[in-house]
Length: 136
Image 1 (cartoon, rainbow, N blue to C red):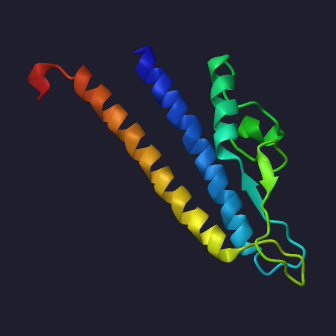
Image 2 (spheres, helix red, strand yellow; image 1 turned 180 degrees about the horizontal axis):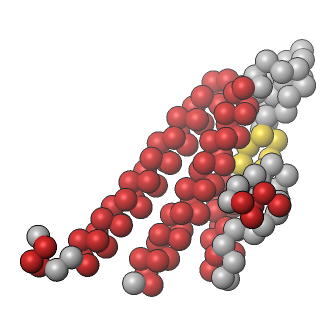
């Protein structure tokens, strides 16, 4: 049971971080025409490592913002966020590369869906294991 709980905790942390990364990418895309906007990116592996090590210590995600108490995951000023490198200089100093952002958006969406499927499959397996043989 402990192994299943640990796997689900890990996947739930990953799901929270994937949704936050999706929000960041969407924000970058929305600001593609904003002069001077600096695109943001999340170091996902590092953020997940920090989140899971904090969860292993009994704390879950570290509350770095008052909105976390309400269940929000606003990591806008968190240490896991970086400024995306500009692949090409622009006159208005905007660093959003729409091609990169669209590719990141799709990649993150696929990984988000995979995480949801894993959690769903784990829960379905657990429910099947708890059913008595007479329940089918």
